[in-house]
Length: 306
Image (cartoon, rainbow, N blue to C red; front, side, top):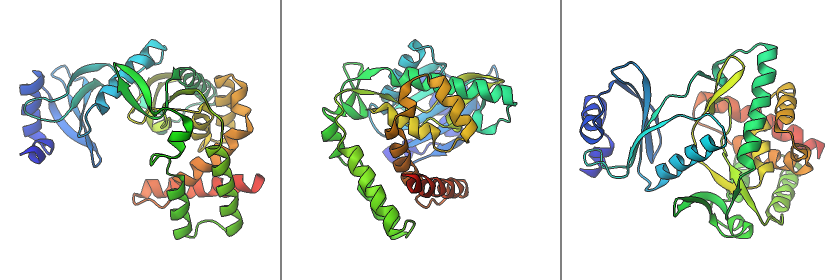
């Protein structure tokens, strides 16, 4: 019965939302499914778009909700949390209902040069504001007494944890013969250097800032979404992830918007190598395969310069 409750679809899910939340919705459609979560898009009677997310992992949606509150306090536009229940009686799994972000995601826009400049500078500014928030601990975010904290007390504990999967990345790169012996050796040296960093303070990282998760209207950012991977860590890692698949011109805009010497720290380039390595692994979906190819190209090009 529990598995069936998580797999509610179509009219059954519409009725469950009405029973559990008192919301009338229509035109419901699943837009994403992972092993532990599902996301649906629907319309209210007023024809407003909303999203419904079910998650099997206790507290993860509460962390996302707290993240939205923090982002909003930082002046960063995010969707509104309409409703949340940890154990709705019909759906039986933690469920959140949020408004749609305004505008269009950046991936599906074709901005003018002037608009592009403002958007990517704003992206840098948003990243700096997020990364400026000190967080206790390191690694994946947990929620303790309504406060976001890293799962591990020290950076060294995080490095030694299963969440720090760099060794698995190396193994898979070797299996698929994607790097030469020389490239592989350089990558191992970079990972060792990152793991041996002396970091005593964690900062908030979005961990998945990319055009798909950034919404814009003309030259303004109007929404940041998907806070499911929040982490406490090194801002240079976040900067590298943001820069990874941007053009040189977009990177320059981002750096100017970030407005800190941190963007030019040599460690950013080394983090970029590692982020590229994690994205270069073969993917099953066609769009992901293209991203993997681009990441592998950037990985090899960047390693060659070091």
